[in-house]
Amino acid sequence: MHSQEALAAVNTTSTMCGVSIRDKSDVLLYVSIVSGVLALVAIMMRTTVAVKARRLRWNDACALAAWVFSISLTVLQFITLGLGLGKDTWTVEPKNIIKVLQVGFAPEPVASPTQTDCSR
Image (cartoon, rainbow, N blue to C red; front, side, top):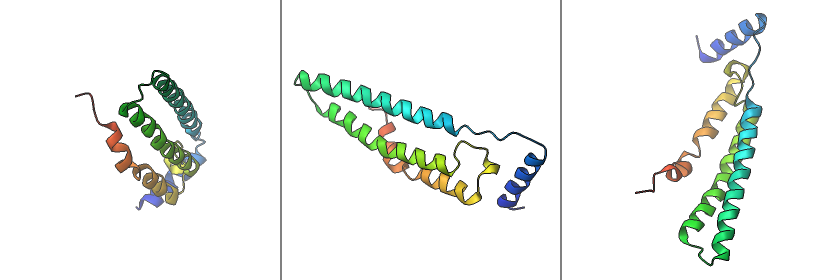
């Protein structure tokens, strides 16, 4: 049985048995918005203090650049929510499942360097 047929079978069975569809996409949306706003507030506070103290250094510029690059990741998050991220897999069209995975893995080359441990 192919994966598309398996998903269709699960969808049909779940629908006929009255299984409720889980949809957590609103939670993902709220988390993205709140974390983006909190990051913006933190960057604004950091930059304001550095500018007022006339101590704007490379690490401040790197933090600001990291926030700017995170905007694209947030936009990708919104795109994947529209494609079905956060919903039961069997309720999402197979072509959208593939798109969610592609969009999810596309930013890895950009995101991976920002997740390194620079404390050493």
